[in-house]
Amino acid sequence: MKKVTHSFHSTILLFLVLLGACRTGQKSPGVGRSSGVYQYENEKKTAAPRRTGPYYSDRQAVTGKNGMVASAHPEASKVGVAILKAGGNAVDAAVAVQFALAVVYPGAGNIGGGGFMVYREKTGQAYTLDYREKGPEKAHKDMYLDSAKNVIPQLSLTGHLASGVPGSVDGMVEAHRRFGKLSWAQVLQPAIDLAEKGVALTEREALGLNRTKKSFLRVNPDKRYFMKADTTDWKTGEWLIQKDLGQTLRRIQEQGRAGFYEGETARLLAAEMQRGGGIITENDLKNYHAVWRDPLVGSFRDYKIITMPPTSSGGVALLQLLRLVEPYPLRKWGWNSDSTVQVMIEAERRVYADRAKFLGDPDFVKVPVEQLIDKAYLQTRWSDFTFARATDSRNVKGGMLPGYESLETTHFSVVDQEGNAVSITTTLNGGYGSRVVVNGAGFLMNNEMDDFSIKPGVPNMFGLIGNQANAVAPGKRMLSSMTPTIVEQDGKLYMVVGTPGGSTIITSVYQTILNVLEFGMSMQQSVNALKFHHQWLPDKTTFEEGAFSEETVRKLQSRGYMLEQLTNSLGRMDCILRRPDGSLEGASDPRADDTSVGY
Ligand code: DON
Image (tube, rainbow, N blue to C red; front, side, top):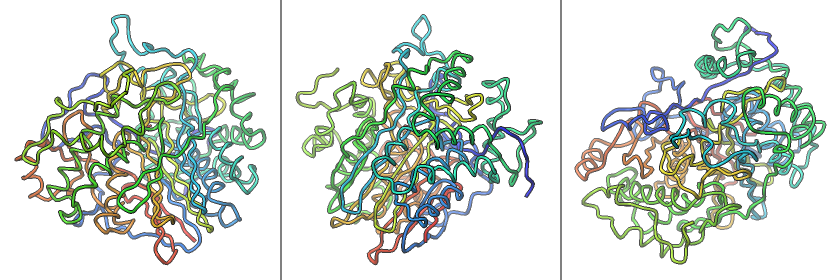
């Protein structure tokens, strides 16, 4: 392979394009074929494998007896397994994978973004860590509106104002401080090696970088990060070497938290913000802290679901979805039969309406979590449902809760030899985040501010709307859909699941869990299975080609469902299932470069 030597740049893909309702005011597409709310821009449409039955591909699972890492990039999964083999536990491996992804998968892996971790110890004790980005001190509710209170297109998406204060490094420091076994230096070293020695670009990664080149150049006019010296296109197999990022990682390795939130890195980040008209200051960085939160725990039939509480909406929404469909005989109806799909869509419609009304940062707004997942409340949500006809989203509002006052992401899963399990979803938000690369430090900043509701009722890049519960405020975390989740069976670890995909994260996790628990699929089959999505507004169901039989399409359409076949895919799942014999099934998504490595 040809080795391209250049001090700046790196890999990858995963870039979201908004084709449905979006903040530029584009109208959502009508019935028929479309690319849906968003798509992965570097989707290889022509090379897509032939679909067989309900599956995207017939990819086979990876089996391991001792440990397993499933992530978006083979190099990152290898790093995780090397840490496990060196005696590290699941948290050590997860920390190493988070940093490795920041190097080999800059479209979504990050140190300039944030994420959520669900950790289940072998004893069954569970913890969650919220290392979501925060609004900077100078953020305010109308910061993305012009003087006439109209949204300024792109401001929350691209460039320096789009970033929240990054949380990933503090998250990893915290996770390691509390649960790590190996030294901090040891878990950082693989990422440093990958940055300094380089990594070969996959076809998908080269494509992603080439497609983002223009906006990199626009946002970072004086720099050449993430591109070749002569700015010609990357080719598959060329090497990315990221010396500045390597130096930043070394500072983090030597100084821990202070290596990012203080000193040289903080100075470089604040200077970058000043240069580009951003608002993050050294003070914002110094004040950032990840938060341990009580896990959100619920049940579905005999299974225990351990998932992420707010600031992510993912866990609440997932439990609502599962509990809403629990009374129905899905298994008898069959996978993606018209009745199964219908109740799943209707559950999604109602849950996303609740999300828009009630969910936000629990440190700022009262989020009625227990009420939202209460079975009696959920039962009331079915009151206007009939099998005869699709409910009209215009008539669906967030529910009435007694006593309530209104007031390119990536996922990886790790299981170690002892049975400790980590489920992490982490992101810059859109592919390559804000496109701003911190000059001298070589890492990309997130565009997570777009996950706030920048104006009530105006959809974000995923078509999601919100209100004051998720309004911009200094120090506040923007609402997320990330849904890292762990499922227990009979008190034992069963599945570790999660995916990127913006608003579709919740519904992909939901289907992946149901595919195993209700429809008898293996973990890999469930990941391979074709998926669909509804999010209340826009009022349509998007689906992967082949996800619905002709009969299901016909029946749903006759009941008034607006269906839209995607030209791209849904989900990039990276999951692990523990089989009855104790072996581990690593199931990575065939839709991208995702790879499981076990031993
Ligand atoms: O936190 C969220 O819900 C979004 N920022 C996630 C973005 C995402 O999944 C993009 N990747 N496909």
